[in-house]
Length: 316
Image (cartoon, rainbow, N blue to C red; front, side):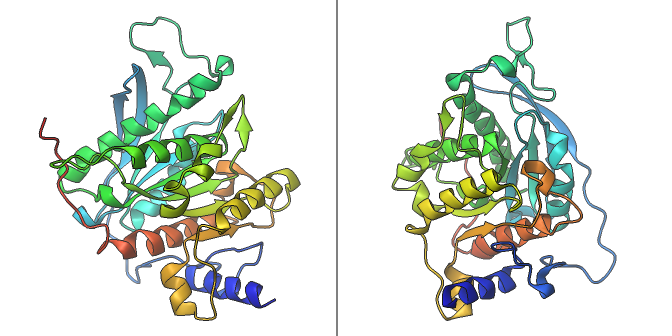
């Protein structure tokens, strides 16, 4: 019971739903809520980028409003979805100052072409290596945001990712690669992603799994993680709980001091009472969108003294 009270104290601070309990004061919580009419937000921009293996990706860019202090967030839809599934979340985060990028992952939405190949990508024929190649899609998104960083429109050093079901595994695998990128004397190439929000993480799909993330000495400790699953779906809830348990030993445990917990706690499990999963958790009837905004605010926005902006142009 003492541990539960500690978790609920943290939940009250963050506006999170932890283990299915929604603190009354947090149900409508939103960071930096404006008292007056908010300013008109910049219009989103549809863009195209090519991955290193030739896939033509379609993305939508939602410019932030805080310049070099705008925290960038990459949003990844679920298997069979498309980038519009997370437009509502992107617009909400943008209204709080975040810079957002939604991506049609390969074989989804409008990302169906490979350079020099006439046939469209058929995701139903994907095997393990095809799924692993989705890391290239995330890398292409990061490279676009790096351009925006160098233009003073966001801070790539405080990068967050929100992902759904199968794309959670892609996000975790890409995080390993981002943290493994060597830091050159004149150019920092990686170590940029600092927080993951995983909506209904899928343990394995066609041999594509995230075990490397949990055995990697860096990612399992360095990244703040928020796991989300509807508690009424027993299978999804059990898997999310299992992942949470695997990560617990590498993250600070709750204490009796709420201020210390607010500063240090970086692993959360959010389980609203619903059967909804994946991108469908971003629902007006649920507080998950604001939970995500608050988590990113705590772990990224309020850490920008640590993750300070730098220009990141390659000398080569």
